Image (tube, rainbow, N blue to C red; front, top):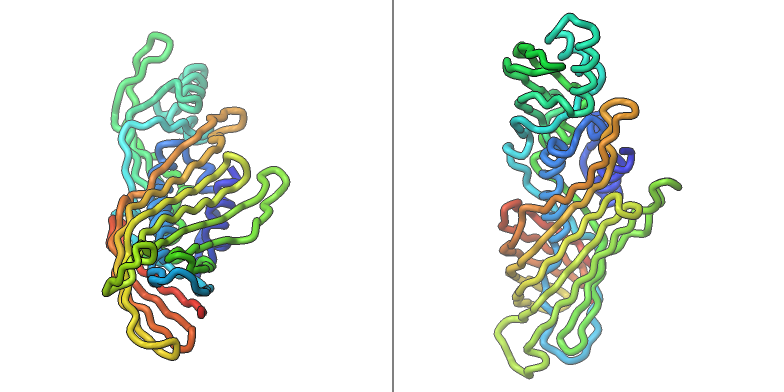
Length: 355
């Protein structure tokens, strides 16, 4: 389970997140969650990371020319806006094996028979006894003052042919708390290099050096690649704007099959530059169809020796976006700012130097 905590740390630090982060021990939080609650806890982060990684790809469309040297390098900053409804989640009647202490507390409330208490406790820990429940919890973006609460309504349970009444009760799991404490906006920064132009085509790269976590887990690897093509260059057509067809893809991996984030995006963008190399302004707009996925594999161990291997795949909520932005240039120093309209809206601020 250390891999999950390290993943969150690395997403925040290796991608250069610029905000005060861990309000508590993320590792303890993740270790306390089985599959369904973990999906809800992490889903807002999947949305934000996917939305941010697909931000900042498009600004200047490649020029309408056959050959030329255009190089730009710098940093792409993105911020995903976090809605209040992404800070808490609720689940009803889900599989939630309890820790030994929580299972003991519930068992003791059902019967005073020690032997039956042990059987009920073991059933609650293994999942063989699955009580109706209602779970309320903060997500990763929730408040550090809030924690996961399991509410059991009054109900019946049958053990060894005997029917018992389970009294209404509440279990507080205070290890499961919000992490980022209502950030409002979730930022990331990544390096980017663009090289062109050959027959109206430009290649763009994003990359971080591999980061070794430890011998057991292995390395973190991050790489992104994109290609943009101005069809007017091959058609020998003169258009009032520079036009680009684009495709982009990225991968963020930890170890082998432990944690993987993948994103893809393709679409169309247009730009028009007014001015010269000394000073210019460039309005631009674009539309992208996109996808992002986060795959996580881990072992949930609510009590020693009671292990549940879990593998989940989460998909970011963004399926497409519309981009509207403006670029400013002064002697090769470029600043691009744009707003991305989608299910998870993002803002982009990019600083580049190019010629």
